[in-house]
Length: 634
Image (cartoon, rainbow, N blue to C red; front, side, top):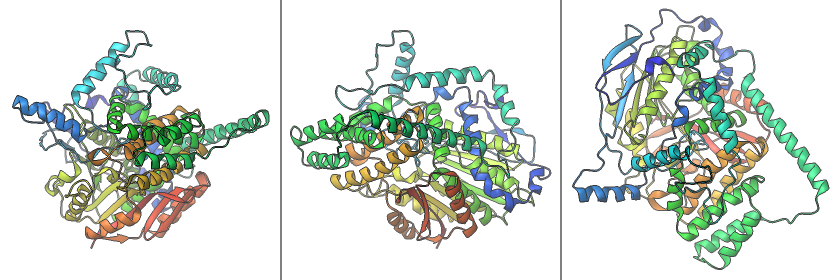
């Protein structure tokens, strides 16, 4: 980590360092032909470089993905505070800070202001990297653990270092099911990765100097070599598996063929009917016999859905979901999984390519660009936009980014959002783009227009990619946070609103319908991973267990406020946006053609990309999973 940022604390009453990037002249790279070269920018290794910079940070392994409390946990805590006669919650609730561009030295002291707003009764459960985008920029949607529980688990982790490995102090769940445990086949690889990382980082200065050695993030005229190499490695692994499977079929006899999908649907119907000891138990037993978290895609999917059905049948879905949250997955591990995901799957890179190109084209005549990003997370999208803006022949515009995300537990609720701003500020400095950043850590529906500090002469873009699926809707609360956020965006009156969604129908109130739709959705995701990533890859298993499996558990075994996986279809979101006062805008034809070309050139033939009613849709084998659209106020 850059030593300039060491010791930065948002709760200390001290001056805050600001970043000022005001280049006296455009960078040499701006003399290039932007239109001929910029298409490669979002498909280059830029995001890989950005992820690597985060992975190389010295304290990354000690951090975990953002978690948010469930309402019943909050209610339990609140009752204790009421008995004690204290106000709930007692800790600081909201923080916003900014890093700006002014005419002055690179670093200039300025007093930081702290704002307070409620974090209690959150209507949103954050997707950490990563949900599968919304995967890994989900990477997974989880409940926030109270600070006391976090500290207890942290203590258990520390104590475990000094006792035999076979002693489990915390009794944490290794599996959802009774009497079964996951095989921790990936633990050795996980520890090996961590130890190698610690050796690699010898000092903070070396990390920064490595970043400075790679000023240009894009290799124009060349393919994105590192991503290409990773994809080639994955293809080689798949080819070896196919060859081994062919030899295995010749050596072994006939195996029993089981229709796991039919068994799962029949079991879901029995669970919905409340059959605890009869048909449902027998069906679950059959499913377990033919499923495994280490088998093919169908077997892995059946394993996790069976666990979710069993939890619902026992009425322990919410309890198990919270228990799984207590086992903190480090941001380092999630980041590694996300790196694999963006290399093997086009959904994220295509989305960033479309968004950044559209923002650049729409704001070409503006000298001030303000991007408001709902769910900024680690800011993976913006390094390539910064580089793209630096290529403008007339010089880059002044870029403002307002990063909005939910507060983390503890005494530094805005820490991750602020760290994202510092990383982006460093990239802006590399490319000599005037840059200002403001971090807002609070519930989306409580953000006020005044906090965004809009200015009349700036081109305003609102960006919201794949994170709105976790906002509650009107089936849970009369005042739908989804509609509140859309109305807020309408009040902002942006020049451009870019909206990305997970296209899913497993938000139905009726369980069997919801289960069937969840089965279809997660079948596509597991089948996709099975086709593009080798089975023994530990990052794949992490994605399936910590992200997809957990999302399926929440959608199937949880209800009411605690069911936070609530995606809607393209048609439903289209209607919401229209009601909020927006009109759809088509993407530029050349931008869309460039995206189509890249998907067909670099990725598996079964990936789908198409257009439907001014939405750009992406999916797998004909099933639409992701959708992206552009809007303007009516």
